[in-house]
Image (cartoon, rainbow, N blue to C red; front, side, top):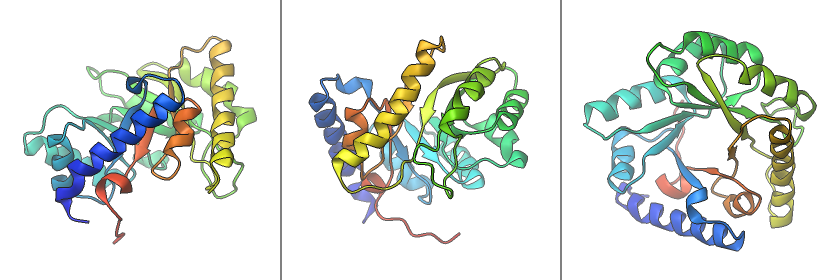
Length: 235
């Protein structure tokens, strides 16, 4: 897919978001699009920026940090960068220094390090807790029964703002199955809010299950291939 298609792809994804929000009886502006730009270079991001996109997600730390610097050097407007990959303890400092959001916190140790390493003068790091909503042994995320304790501990840390939850459910082809997984995350989110946590973010849904996620209350959808095209991994 040639990069010149990125603006058209963004228009198509935005139309899908608008349609799904309407189906759910929601205003379209209650759902934010996070363009997942992993494996795509600064020029691809720059095309998305020119088409009006401002929030980008990166899975690989060094690639993301390099891209953030490259976009600044290219004179891009202020962008919002979300880290959405797995986090190793020895990689927390550059995440805390360069990113605005982190969607993949699953342990208090990681949250504590992000809190301690967030530079003075920067806004609090916006945090989502990743939940292993499908119970997959191979999937990252806190177990649902351990979520409440982690959420209250993270909410108490300085330099962080706990915003909500994130999940990557087990892949499902059927719309009802997709909805069921997202509904489980929404139920956990509602319970935390009932417990007094001021959450406002459900980061769920990707290119293949965006509609189900929005119907179940997603406030951020993470879309990559439908915007940038098929990925080739050279890592």
